[in-house]
Image (cartoon, rainbow, N blue to C red; front, side):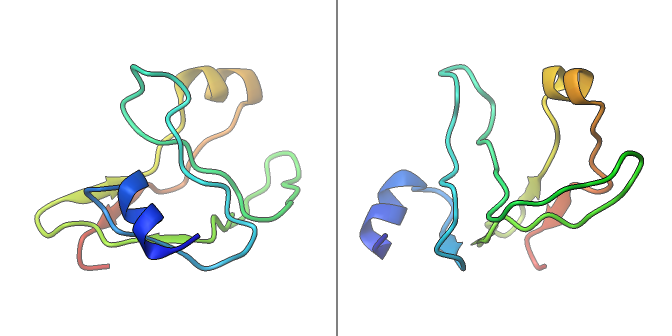
Length: 92
């Protein structure tokens, strides 16, 4: 994907792709508050286990803002998953 099309998809936050297997961020529903992330490679997490999941993307968070990674409540309930961290500062 070239830079022009990336800027058109995400006009307020520059998004960089670091893997050929990136799954584009998207809003699944018109009323969604944010974009859905996906892993850029297959992974298995054992029950009660932990893992670092790579998305293959990077974002330039605007100064004075922060990025947040969180689960949707329905997904958390269905699959019993949780996020160990989720705030991405603009200077990270």
